[in-house]
Image 1: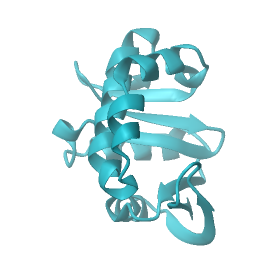
Image 2: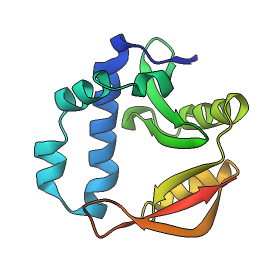
Image 3: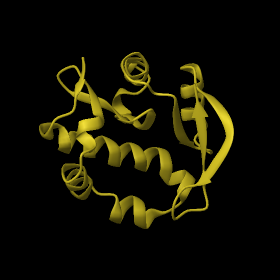
Length: 146
């Protein structure tokens, strides 16, 4: 079931974000200090608790929160599925739900994250010529639109 995220989901959301980012981005950014010192579950949970992000987040919950999508206006700001539950249709369910219930028209993807780009293309998004540097890195984000 896809539902609005609540405060009781914070630790699970943070856990998903931390571990998926480590698995997917460490090889791209090559920054162990960030991956294993800065990117920690408790600070991520606190950051999300101290903001209004939960007001813009949905989770996939079938008894276990397995994935999340964060929507800001017409942008998909984040979409993550726990590594243990990837390739089971959870990301697809989240993005299709967002497309049906929210005016999402674009997102940013890391240019080297070809798996994510293929996933978004399969769900109606296409690459544009718009790029920007990921803050604090030498890696580019590419805009995708539908």
